[in-house]
Image (cartoon, rainbow over all chains, first blue to last red; front, side):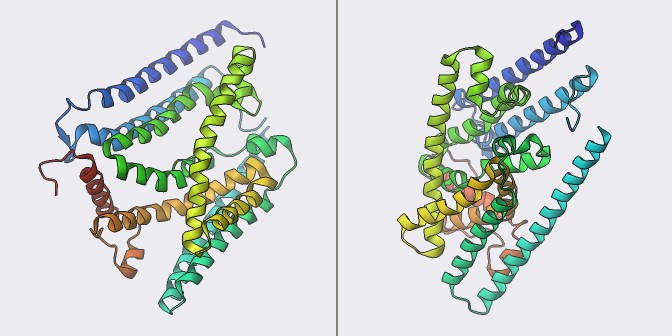
Length: 87
Length: 284
């Protein structure tokens, strides 16, 4: 398939989104364990670092995937590269 | 195209109908066993009933979705609706390795054990962002194939294969151990036989239908887990701490299975806190 200018723009935006989300993913995953000892305040009655590792980070991961799926779906429709339900 | 879309719609509706009936059947089954227990059915028979109904159910799904088509066998024909695929993935996330292995790891290691929780949940992000969409577009069956084609040559493919073998080996050991443990627990057969009994069930289920059978079994499993996971956690924490989660009393417990979570969560946290040494000022 010949790539058009439109496809290139689509791919760049797709890549930008992926990189941004990966950075967010890395930030959350790395910073929570690394700074665990210095984050002494509590949230919902739990030490913040414990809460994040047990639940907070997992919720953030879920939100990241949700965001990715929704944005990419919109992007696919906008650039007309979405797959029909059946092929 | 629209006709095919209609067929897909019908397929989806049919799936929803099947699983709705299945959920009601499951609830009825649990209620029936509870009633039988009240009437004095020995515990060993309850164990057998649970065991063989489960194996029978999974074997039934396996036989129903038997197939000889390569695409059906390896990737379930690429037409599992997103919602059901999500349920199957969720069942994977909270499989035997999670609720036996993970609970034990947290119990033993405390805060450090949470690294596993972070790792295998965070991994889903990497898969979603970098592998899954492209693997789907790629149209082949395995990640090593994809890596080989994407990066060219056998080095990338080899690394992919090694990673797959290492992950599967560690994971399968935990899973098989879990299978043996559960079978032994419920039927009080010897652990060695328990493993093979469980494996026989898995074989019947997945051998005939491949990925198709596995996916639909996992959706069924997901529904069971959604209904029962909280109870298991509550029971385990009670055994460990002697604290009774709210609502964990006889028949009331069954009714409140879905709602009695707050107590269970508090107890789970109490266990973790006890072993991790990080205490809050309000902690027990």
